[in-house]
Length: 104
Image (tube, rainbow, N blue to C red; front, top):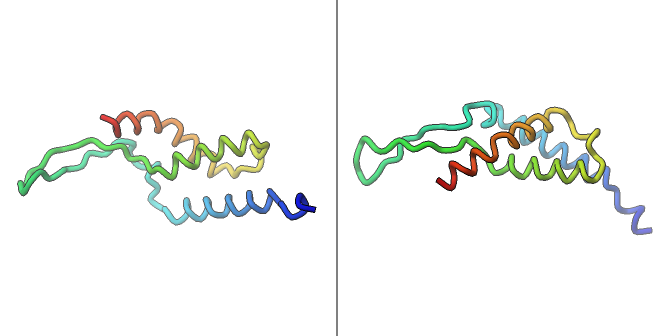
C-alpha cells in the first residue's frame, strides 16, 4: 500500500524539470565562460585595489554532479538528460581547481 504511493519516477521528473529550468534561466552559464576570473578587490579607500584570481564556479554545480552520481547509483543513468549530464561533467573537471583556488 505504501509502495504504491511512492512514485520515484515522479520525483525524478520533477528533479529534471527543476534543473532544466535552472540551466535555461541562466543563459550566460558560468560554466560556459572562463574557469578563472580576475577581479579587482578594493582595499581601504584606494582607487587601484588588488587583482585577485577567483574560481568561476557555482556551488549549485557541485550539488548537481553529486546528485547525478547518486542517481546513477540508483539506476537512472539512461534517464538523465544529456544537457544536464554535460554540465555535470564539466563541473566535475573544474571542481578540484575551484576548491584549490577557494582555499588559497
